Length: 369
Image 1 (cartoon, rainbow, N blue to C red):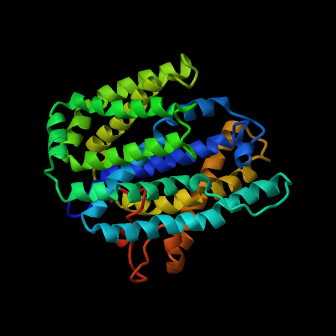
Image 2: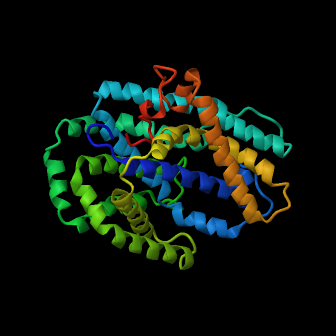
Image 3: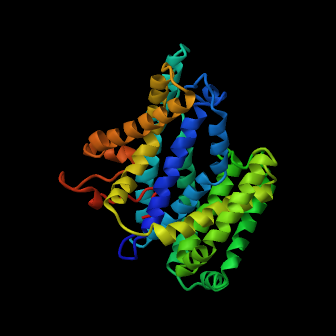
């Protein structure tokens, strides 16, 4: 991440996780319940898309919570706890408030206008609930994080490193997640938005993400050695969940599957993605504004493709292209270049107009820097 050793694989995983989130949300627009959650809905549904979406939905947000916890560890390397809280307040709370009063009401307004519903200004967090959770986790866990960061040889961290000398012990970290699922007993494990299950699961894996980074190479060697095993376990349990239990398997199987997907992602990322690139430098900065904006361009994309006389699968592809193109063009032409609006989308002010993307460091809640 910096002179501590930047982890490009974590940057890539963060970017990929946001891309999966956008694909998941566009998929919802092709399901029969989309209109009920303020998305413009295609009259032609694509059931196969939903099956694909369900294959990733149990772990994609948990991966982001993991990465966000890892980001706090790296951020504390360059800041004291007061500086970090101030920075997180600006980088999380300001975009959350801005989105609450502008971005989310806008895409809800677009849906109302499209269906001829009474127009109403409705401030709401919408998809930005994730930011509210992350900010709460930072506030709640900062004393523990700061204590452990100042004591890298604390008995807890030493014990965890020794434990991971046996890579299979990584599976022990699945147990607390299973306990959370059974204590909260959510109707669906994947239902994280605006639920206590989502809050406590996020808090747990956010904390685990911090601890995994604090363990140093012990964690990375473990996931590297287990990556193929974890992938096989995840794929098998995914098929069991989708085709035996019809999407919702028992909580313990769902948790084992989700955690193995995440371990596999970290393992393969460590092995193949930990290398710098100009593309990654750009994408890792753009990811936060793209996350905030995507629902607006998703609505525009659906407005554009619904009237077309083409197969629904092609409409989905076109909607995805419009959503991504709109987000990245808005970032490139507007957000990135206009200093006064950058903080509203989680970016720092540029000290100089000619500053380049590689200097435009982002330490945002979905960043691992």
